[in-house]
Image (cartoon, rainbow, N blue to C red):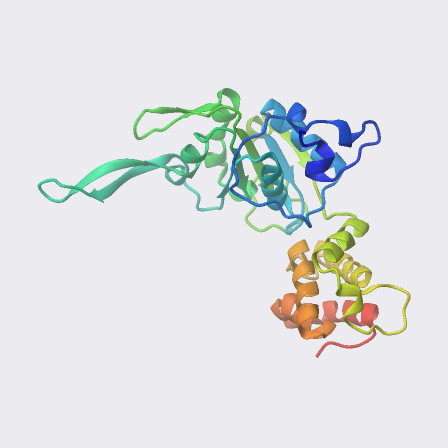
Length: 319
């Protein structure tokens, strides 16, 4: 029996029965067991629909949203369920074409002087030759625009030429290129993402855009409860009709507002949320767990603002 869209992603559609849609009809599947799917990961139907459509048509995607909302992990988990290899290539201000395309390297050899030069493919040229690969260019908005512009021909034709050798490398069958970034490629109007580069329109126009954010509060709470089933029974809360998992999510949302207002510089990610829950089970202490997962990485000024949020949610002060 073939796996369905619902089996793989656990999503329902307002217009179709996802339990009757074979996943292989949506996009081609691979046979890679590189990553074991996280059974506690939660998908949104809208996001899955858009991602699978673009993978199915090999349309490059530009996925953008706030730091720590799970852009890269989204593609890892999609790849795991499609059984397709996922290659994550980190981009930054110092990223060079040689790192991406390749360069000559000195290697030991049985020759007169014991060494010889040999060309070594870079991270991008290696990844794009893997059939069915999902090639993720992570934090693409941090890459110099001169480097990013070199992708135009690759995205248009599926091939790229290595300047040092003149070789043209073709993308293998069913390879999809995905960019993850904090911005949509334009100017960072928020001022939050230092070092973010504005990319030219010729590059941006070659992508299908997908804006993502943190999951709705009910889905974030679902992640906590799925990952830590005992979380709502482990600690005695002050008088309240709310569960610990719901208060944790409310705290996360409030801190993210502080980040958006630039009162706090450290994003509160889904990873922080899960670490907080896990540490709460380990310590049996919500405050100590919060400090372990997030609070103790803040500056003194930030600790004051975040401490006020914690006090408002739980009724006591952090030390």
